[in-house]
Length: 303
Image (cartoon, rainbow, N blue to C red):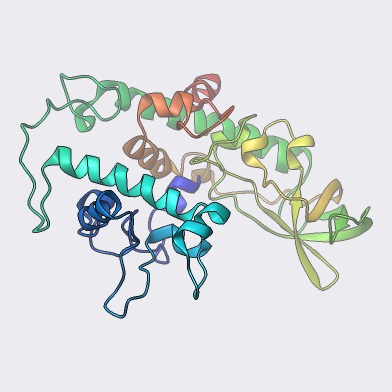
């Protein structure tokens, strides 16, 4: 699942301030906020650098012209001034509430009572949470059951494995109706698919697509729409793309056996999941999600 595979990416960008986009602090500790806000209140002027050029903060810079910037005229066109004003006001009010000064000191507040990061109980922490411990056991069992069912359907019944000969419809662009061709399965990500791959809705942080690569002539494509052919694969286990090759059927089976430990492996992904998400987030998704996968219900259905 993507929350596990992507946790140690070395190419992730450094954290930057949400106000000025500089590194080393966040927007609620940004040393530019107080001075910018005072400029807004006193003169309604855009702060300038030592050369007299308008300073461009954060995301707003993409909407501003490099030369001839007029904050009054240009703000009507691209709303840069209004956006900057709102961002500055938000950061300033939080800094004022926290007692922030430009030397980087903050007023210490009384620490809030500790609660469990998974279930929210005030009687224990995440490390000793009995609900999280039981949920992990359910995840392990559900994943074993699903992997057995998935292997039986894809490999034993249909022979879909590395080396299988398949008929596909290749679509090289969205306007193409596609052309039926014969290809050879060259790669399947058996190591990362799991019980969440059967989910009928997608999860923003626990998507687990089944990735099957097929060689057609001298080109390699990814099979798409696999959830329409296999009961154990759902929308959360299928890559959302218009390109690639549409799977039609297996011509020559290749029931390549997988090692017995494959059924019980990949437990560490669920451990990552419960460390980074609360029980409610697993059940209802994140606030920005819509019609997301109920991971708790998915686990209960397969355990």
